[in-house]
Structure formats: structure tokens, C-alpha cells
Length: 282
Ligand code: PAF
Image (cartoon, rainbow, N blue to C red; front, side):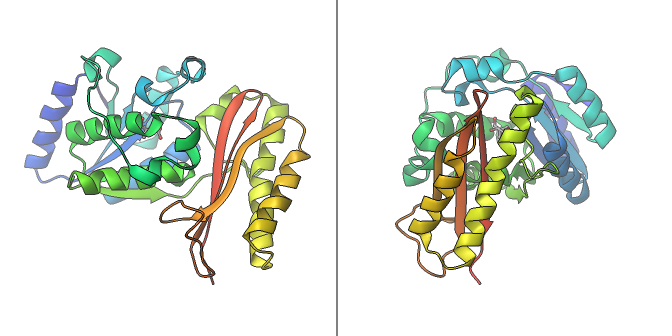
């Protein structure tokens, strides 16, 4: 696997690959790689001639300095994993190379960024949008892969490429889970064994909500009963649990035959975790 740290160098490299007619898949990450990232890399390896993984812990998408400081940084272990997975190129730039100066642009994704994560993490999606745009411009991928655990991020990135006519196909890859059901996340590395057990209830709650909806309990009652379930879990502090239309992420636009997103965020041992379930009407 080739390691490239300079933006100029990656651009020269990908232009050369493209001249040779090779397709490029990008797996953008912030490192602390796990099985979820492997699923993204596997799909990219299958669908492209060359797979490039980027590792960059993007400061502009953290609206909380403590959260950024706590984010696990494990570059050496990550490199070994990427080698073993068969990734062709690791692009791991430094902060000064990516942000030689503070970005002046402000992206506005309208309603899409005002709900769910956007409501609790002001500025987060502006930071995500800017770094993703930079990575797409530096790597020129045919396809880019994003985990559906961050469903709102996936919709935001699709909106970004649509607005800027970026010729990259944005592909969502299903959430990978531990045997307990807990969504695999880099943040799980900061949880104790007890914390991991508690965190598994996040997915139990989503499953309960799915059952309630399938039992035709209605959205309001489902939210009430799921909230009751979460309230009883010691050590879990839910920030939000919402049921929204999966295209718009708005709750007002739900009808009987809407595709739904059941979306939750909460804290365990001071670590912020998110998860969701997509529900297609029958
Ligand atoms: O999902 C992530 O890991 C990050 O938000 C991303 C897409 C790599 C941008 O920093």
C-alpha cells in the first residue's frame, strides 16, 4: 500500500491513474478503523480498480473541543489494517496541508442540517461538507463510500455533490453491528465493557420502535413507549429519539406509506453515540 500525505502528490497520482483508464473508489475516514470501515473498503475494492482510503480527523466538524481531543487516533494500527484489507493507497494529510488557511465559505444545507444531528451539533455539517468537497477534489473518485450509521451525513453529502455537480457516485453502506446489536463505531473504543453493555440498549430501543410501528401503534405512541424504554436504562442518557421521513428527515411529512428513519443519539460514559433504523412501508 502506498502512503501519500501531500495533497499535491495525491492529485498527481490520481490523474495518472485516470489517464490509464483506472476507476477510483474513495473511502473517507477519520481513522480508528474498524469492521464498519472494512465493509466500505470491501465494497470499494469490489467495484473499483483502485481503492483510496483517507484518514483525516477533521477539526472543523467537531463543535466540541473535548470531543475532538477524545477522538481515538491510531494511525500505525490503521495502516496495518488497510494493508491487510488490500487497500491500494492511504491518503493521510496533516492539518496544515488541508487547511493552509481557515475556510471562509459557509455551506447551508437548509432544513436537512437543521434537524437531528444538525440541531445538536451546530456547524458540524458545514465542516463535513467542506472536508468532503476537498477530498473529492483531491482524489477525483468515481465512487465514494459512506456508512449509513451516519444517515444524515449520507444525505448531506448527496446534496453537496448534487449542488456542485460533482461527478462522483455517492454510495451508502449498511451499518455493521456487534453481536449485541450495538452499531460499530470508532467511539466505542472509549467505552468500558460495562459501557458497551449499556450502549447495546440503543439498538434494542430502535428494534422495539420498529416492532411498535409494525404493530400499527402509531408514531406518537411509538415515541412515547420507546422513550419509556430508554428512560429505564441506567447509564444511558438519550439526547433525541425521533421518527422522520427518510428522504427529508422531517417529522411533519410522514404519511402511512412514508419510508421512515428511526434515529437516536445518546451518551454512555460521556461518549456520544448515534444509531438509526430505516423502515420501508409494506
Ligand atoms: O464519517 C466520517 O468519518 C467523517 O465525517 C468523514 C466523512 C470522513 C468526514 O470527515
